[in-house]
Image: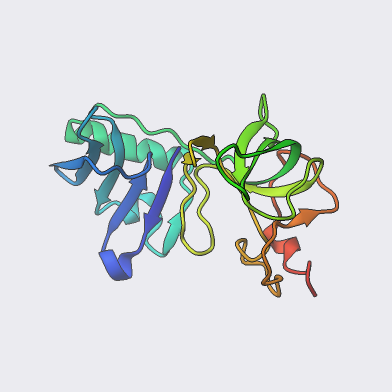
Length: 210
């Protein structure tokens, strides 16, 4: 997983790269123009800050989340090697907002409103997603924010746990997706058509509630 953010007006020429969710026990090591952020308990890298690479990466005019291609990630890996770090980053350009098919649904054993779904998102097997929407049902076509997705609010989606049950993504409402004129009531967006694993078309969705 690879999330990258660049905001030169606020932070200067610093590319922030996240590979895992933040943890309580984290520390940093800086070598040359690279800061490595790692989990103190196991030394696993959870992110990096790269300084003064905006022009070389060709992102100096961008702001917000940036999507790095393989060539740009190779530049970052060269910077890691030059700084003396052994970590290696991998480009990840797979869609993070996809259409899902709710294959099965059952009640959460420790909640009166959460549901445990097995949802087909076009991978080798369905993913387990815990959902609290009142209108969730088996057989629906829905929009899934997979781990690595960044919501319009800036919230990041990571694997998590809800009331002791693992959850690998979020089934989204139209409001959470930032769709214009979305209903303000609770409930996920249910699609009329689509294929599991297909990237969700935000541009086409702008007209859903005209």
